[in-house]
Length: 114
Length: 113
Image 1 (cartoon, chains in turn red, yellow):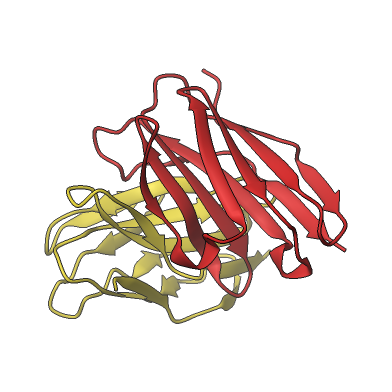
Image 2: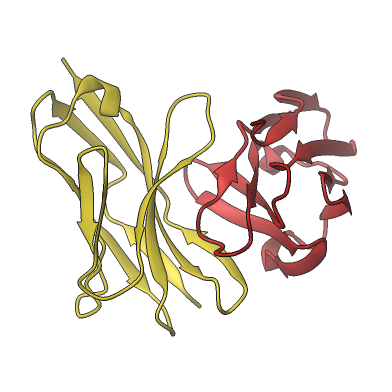
């Protein structure tokens, strides 16, 4: 079975650019999550969708970060405009939804903002 | 709000050493507790969970016991191997409340042969 697919694996952006990261969850999973990973903060929640409805978003990320579920098998995370402090690994995860705890993560997108 | 604290940022061990990673949580409800492991170049993987006081979760030789009294879920392994080198995350979850998992800051474990 295909796991969670994230593209691209690496992204380099200039400050002020708009970037879009993509995620395909495990087929049939109802829950989708976006997390940001840094060494200092660990894993921070950006957005959580259940059956395409937004359940929760990370309050600190609302202004320049927007995640969308375009359909049940595709999600995007847009960062606009990017800032150097956004440099991090962005992880997408999905879950069957019956019990939200077992998350299946993709390998992540490493974003570098110059 | 709810939170998870991992005391150790980095742990360096030799093979066959005993591993302990401390995890304490703060939550208003009765959350489920989890450990995830992340190997280089990959996303975190579910290791195990516990959802009741005194319940023990275990997998691959790792174990942790849910302790509501001390609000802890410490990860232990009796004899580590070089292949256990990874980042370990403690997390808490509130599925009934429709909340996403809250993760700790992670502990990097390095095991030398």
